[in-house]
Length: 152
Image (cartoon, rainbow, N blue to C red; front, side, top):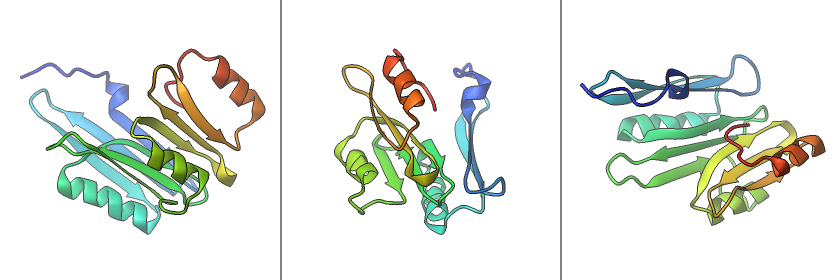
């Protein structure tokens, strides 16, 4: 069997939504011979559940997921056959600022959604690039001075 290449903590994604009863867990499992994913969720928006179930049905690997308290969500998956990235979000097609950023960029690495419309989108480019909306000024200053932002 091949060695497991990623640290244990990096193989779990946990996100909470509007309450502690609203959550999603993505388990990246690996027994040293094969990899698979398990998606568990509770009290999530119906359209989010449909998309994450579609990922499981088509064996797309979920690479990023985010829930927010106001039923907004983001989901990114990689097609195992073509290695192409697919993305879905709750405001898709609404022409919102988040919608515009996500449609314009194919290099999104992380999305974080907060309450009251707060948003963070990290993108690969020549350097660290991110788009934000509604974040606390102190957090923005810290992000602008950071050399690398890996998670929020």
